[in-house]
Image (cartoon, rainbow, N blue to C red):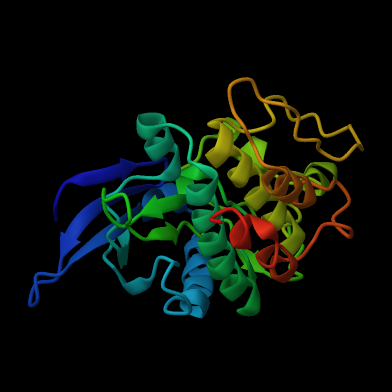
Length: 265
């Protein structure tokens, strides 16, 4: 085992190397003793990861898993470039062209997730990783600890997310607050999170600080001092942040939006 990459409540993520090939992976080490009575959560995560692994090049792949008496080991792609939060903290917000490229890549991966019958349910800057520290490195969707099958409305809490509760709140769709915090996770809720991520990439912080979710008004992208944002980018974010999930566009619809086709021109 190599260095520790992240330490959480239930798990530690470390660098690991294949004994025969030397290939590097990220190994999620879960302490079974801390999961007593909740072991099914790991089984659920593995089942869902098996559905999406290798489905898209921008989804972190589960390569193998095994267990010992006290621990479970899940081996994933190694991403050494940090997460989106760390990148924006060190480099600042993205240009519209840069944000457009990242958003299109994430939407393409999210389309594969939804096509596999899954909802991610936890798209935040902490679950968006980069393969390496290079500027042109691949962006990856990770952490399926709270994911579930489309249509599954069972109240089963997830585990293992690297996001803080405050950060997660800023990316949770309003309908999920109304129906119980982790009771409902749907495809439209993932689109909402994409809208918040797009705003975060462009401005450097989420559009919401306090998440009361009693306001029935759709989000309006107001003027941001010192930042020029095009009409296409504003329209994209506002479309994703429509409060009514039945009016919110699908992944396919937002993939056709000008934020990906017009901002590089």
